[in-house]
Length: 294
Length: 289
Image (cartoon, rainbow over all chains, first blue to last red; front, side, top):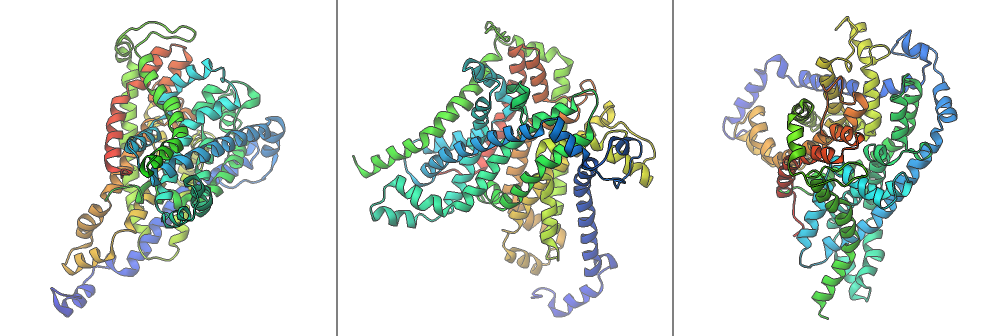
């Protein structure tokens, strides 16, 4: 191993290490840093949960790190008087519809891009990447005019159509990355046996890609579930407000109802965070390692 | 029909639905936005072609120059913070240590949290009374006075930057970690044999190996951060006065005044910078052919 310095040099060097480079000290240092980082990550989440369990007087008059008299009152108030269940229902409808439509047509497109050969394929790929990178902040003004002309403003299905602008590029991009990793042999075998190309998609590739489909579905769902800007612009009626819209509405009032706001935050974050955890491994691979040159 | 042309036909047919959506809902609005920015359009009246008048008007506005400065500050400062924190943490997590899996899971938490929830929580954290930041700072004696972090010009931007970094660094960290785990161990062994120190190994092995990923993450994150609306909207709404105003928020305010031509011009003013970033991303990301 010690090609240049000889065996002795290696041992000597190890003994001459200053104290702060000893393996034990180094390991302790790493754990200390990781512990501090974990603390910084957890504190806001902890704060969200504790405030959601506190009454106003505990929030303002006696600020403390630990709730003295935890209560579910905020949750009850949010669900009973603020109609939060309706917001959750609206968000579920919007996010699920967006996901189903996106997955269906995105899997066709991803299949086409990965497995077929034709002119302008590169151009199509470019357009999808371009759309994936297109910020909503650039699209909301023209889209508001288009949606108004189509008489789709202030409606759930109008919002779903607008959400396709980010959901379709996202799901096509991620699915194409996933399909690329599936060997084409099985589809080719099926086609030799007489299955059509589209049959091969439905009978071979999609069943094989179930984990990928689920992960992409989760990401599309959460992207729609989390969206605020379009909802703010396109939804004006109270009864079709989505969750982010309902919570931001609680904040722009005269009095900030932090207890109920944080209860709403917990309720809307928890399911999504669990889903995200299940899907994250795939996302990272799809977004960076698999799609980057080098 | 030959096999090749039948194949091509199926290829086109399968991609048509997505193509229609993208052309109709992304490409058309994109060019439409550019067109509107050259008109005097208001809600209910398409207006006339006014050339560069909207842009000339914007440049004369102090809130617009403020917007440019804030957006650049936001992208650069959060970018540097996320790069340093993300890379350092990825290197630590790449070490063979016990409990690595648990820490990885911790790092993912801010990223898994919906953005609107994260920024609502940070808004609450920075509140003078009942906010966790002031409580921790006064209780530990680090800073004894109560600060209205989001309510004063000097601290509002740093506070939003802290929240944006908190929410954004996991993506960087996890992307770097994935890249680090793909670096062949032999490279480090070889560098060690050649007598390279840890610092030298970092610069001569680690950085070159993961450079493409670093570049893509910087570019993607710059695009996302410069266009992020909810961090500013939920924490400060661009305030106090215009201390934290950024492009999407200014465009949103513009739309509320119903002067769509001017509002579109705000968004379109970003297009040149956006196109440059997109150009570099497309150059770095693998083509389909």
